[in-house]
Structures are given as C-alpha cells and as structure tokens.
Length: 194
Image 1 (spheres, rainbow, N blue to C red):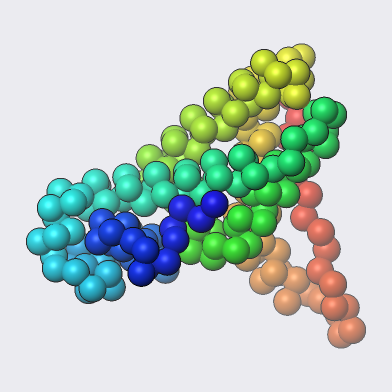
Image 2 (image 1 turned 60 degrees about the horizontal axis):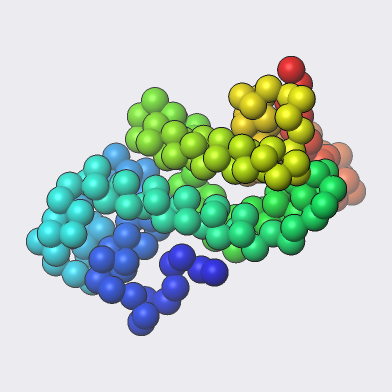
C-alpha cells in the first residue's frame, strides 16, 4: 500500500499534503511557507488554507501521512509464530518502506532529531503507534511480557529508526577515517537494555 499514490490519482488536498512532505523533508517545516507548498502542489494559497486552515494543520496531515506509511509497512510484514522472527519481519518491512521513500526518511530525521520543536507532534504519534503495536504483540504472545513495556517501545523505535537517524553521521565519519581500499563501512547495530 502506498499512502501517497500518484498525483494523477489524488485530490487537491492529497497533492498539497504530499508537496508539504517533500518540502518539509528538504527544508524543515519551519522554513516553508504555505505559499511555497501551494506553488509546489500547483494550487492556490487559498485552497491550502481552505483544506488545512494553518501550517499546524498541514503539519498534522503530513505527520498522519508518515504514520500511514509506518502502519502500512507493519501490515505488510509476514506474520511469524516465533517472536524474534516476527520482530525481524516487521523491522525489515519498515526498513524497505523507508528505503523506498526518501522524503519520509528526511522528514522523520528532522522531526525526531529536534523533538522539542517542529517534530514534537510526529514523535508523539510514532511513540503512540509503537505503544499500541507492542501492546497488540504482547497480547498475541508475539512479544515478551517479561520486559517493561516502556523499554520495549524505546527498543522498537530505536531498532527501526536508529540506523535511519545515525547513518549520515556514520557515513561522514567513515569517509574521513576509511583507509584506501576499505570499501564496506562498519555495520551499525542498536540495542536497548533495561
């Protein structure tokens, strides 16, 4: 499932939301005007205001689109009886979704790395989604109920997004320190312990 679809299939509201995702991902929501979003979407400024009322309303719609991407990826994960295999399948589905959607990656990176400003809402929504998903997995005996729920939520979010968030730093450091002939950079592994 692609929550974005193609511009030919979309309503003006969806085109505006998609244009906002692209611009917010590239420049940051605080630096993008509603007029710039309207121009990118090929609609009038008044239409943007009609559908979203304000930049905060547009940002909420973009956040929901990002959550839709994550929920779609989780639904596409192949179920497994073994909790470890199930978690790996879900993580792989999220990774594939992120690889196919660079604007989502850039938007999430901006939002999560500045959680007190423009990203506070998105981070909260992603935490809520993860909390619901972990609860459902615990109820289905596909996640441990021996660990604290709070630790599991942090662990899932970091496992699914840690590489996404830290890859630019790892790449930059690797470019500075790699010896001639060293092609493959080290693998980044994230683990949360109680």
